[in-house]
Length: 514
Image 1 (tube, rainbow, N blue to C red):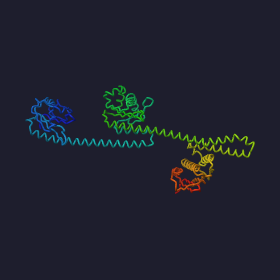
Image 2 (cartoon, rainbow, N blue to C red):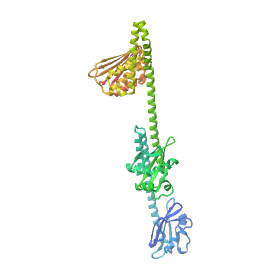
Image 3 (cartoon, rainbow, N blue to C red):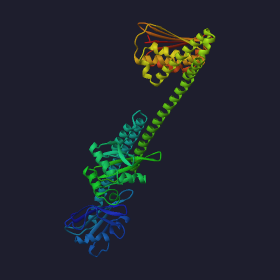
Image 4 (cartoon, rainbow, N blue to C red):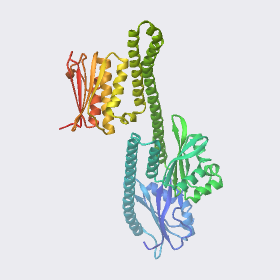
């Protein structure tokens, strides 16, 4: 249009913002300047959707004309930029270099406005599509991160390893330079996990953070956002001394997001994320940081539950061993004590009976010793592999003989050393089978036979009890599944034979031949 001034205003909420301008004298307008819709000529053009030519700028009272007056503009043409759905802004020009603004200039400017609208709409669509893709990518990253964290939470990793992984994921998904998981210990804060920070940086960060900010986070149980550490106002001034603030700045931090870590309503610590540049945190980002803290709380609680379960298992095992000790060893020793008490009087009166009682006393003490050895094997399973298999099975059969009416014998043909896992597996299979015989078979006798052939070791456990129909029992009945699994684990074959009234026989062969 060959004018002295051209300017583009875009609608921005309830105001119009200078998006671009060209002028011989640019002292009165700046990109970013804003004017209200009310009492402005531009606002009226936006509302009416029709161009307007102000021929006498000097005597105009509109608020948006004041900076135009200072530019010495006499005639001012305003044309709306209209899309299908809304007004986007205006294009305005002032004073032709030669001649006067008129209908032809208005037509030219309307054509320019239409082209500008298309360009702006395309730019906005591109921007929205890019934002949509960024948001979709962020949601995908968050979903993948949460999925991976669930996998890690359900793994056998230690709580420290899980917290390190959560610190890594939080930093990557929330685009932080680094992160630290603080743990409250004895009124002080210790670093339990970190990512993206050197050991020296992490220690310095702890020194700067653990006094004011983390304590404030935990006291309020709310996230604390510090968007710009280089301009400490409000909360930043309250939460940091100048010395602590400088320590963070020296390490390159410009923004911090800290979220409390609460486990079962109990304050555990905090997750803090650090950024190299000042930034505003969206509600979604803060909520996501809280989600990472929730995952960390799950890891801590799972670790606590695992410790409790292990302690309960240890306590239960101790109780079982105490019962076994009382039921077997204590009763054997009590019976032996009674026999020993009457032995002097019985020897004077009936030596044959005394000799029989001495044999019984010997059997009781041997059985008690065998029971003690068996209990020691339960307390220290590695002891199963310290001797030969025949030796530990002899202790086992003697222990069971001392407390039951079933006569259990052990036969061994040859012997050679076995791999530890094989020896443990065969011992446990024999132990399970003999316990089943004592509890369920009503057998008068049982035999354990070990045959060490050059090519294969054979273990046979058989009894003369009541037996059962093998077709009518599940794999878990009478511990059959457990024994079968133990055999599979050591590469042995496992077969069980039984009939009602004809006892039961278990055959185990290692290694299993094709």
